[in-house]
Length: 389
Ligand code: GDP
Image (cartoon, rainbow, N blue to C red; front, side, top):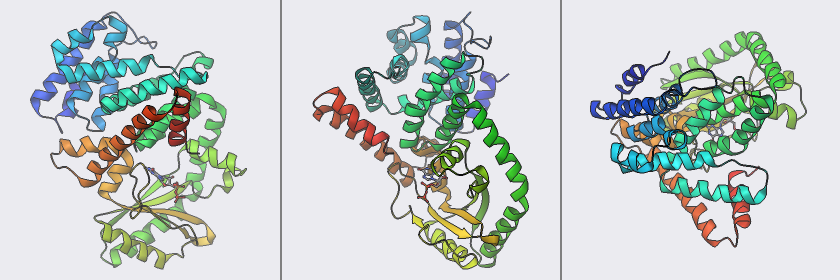
């Protein structure tokens, strides 16, 4: 079983001892407060906040976020007051816990008005401190991982809300690792049979295509090495929900989805990205109209990369992404990369830019809220922004 000492060991990699001590103190406080309470699985309740903190630790989030994760259910579930938390752990942590608790009370029902008001509450909570939503995303992720024996209808309701609200917010903030996992867990809860079928198909296709993919990977790597270009070629795989959506939208069977597997090339700097693109296009002909330069023109969530599709051997199209190491960190962690770099004490322009962009997004939402005539009008704006498709 994962313990607080395991977490503390992990934190030793990026936090100073006094901050680790504070995280431990928050854990023991939560353990006391939840004493006697259990998760549906039968485990002591505190295993949940500990797991949420661990998710955040993997993203190198700061100690206050981790403390808030430890304490995120004590106001709601144990009757501890915000004031008491403030006295114990200081104002920022108490505010974070309060913010996360408020989000927890929000359920997104279908009734438009209730949903609109809930969105407003969520935007307000985010605008005070964006870490509130990051802690909440980690909380939802762990709950999705442990949906387990819940009644199927309840499972589906939570999964739908996760897909429609939380996965999209994760995407909007560029926290792709969490978005992908939330999407696949939701998909598996809503359509267990379809998810299982795709999973099996991917596993078997991986077997079939392995030798062809290996061949392409080594010829890509070799041509980089021949040109003395610093770059690492890695394989990547589309996640279940995106495969499913593509099959559904294009009415194609799995066998006709050609981009289940692709490649990513990670390099040092922007100039190398463009040089590598040249080498790659020289090796395999590019498919016309499929080149995208998200380095020069980043996506709204800050995502940066070059995308191209090549004609591989036997006409099989191969998707290739080319980006720097920092862009890779941003692509996985989005706004959370801000803390990733802060922990290393080197502020990074890409991470700073992402943080600024996220703040601007939330600020824009607040502005809209101020100017919208009523909450329904506001929700229309937010929906268009959050759910462009
Ligand atoms: P395009 O058709 O080349 O513009 O790209 P798509 O939007 O179809 O995305 C293709 C692939 O690029 C996805 O499967 C992801 O791997 C990656 N990608 C695209 N947008 C993002 C993003 O915002 N964040 C991250 N992390 N990856 C993205």
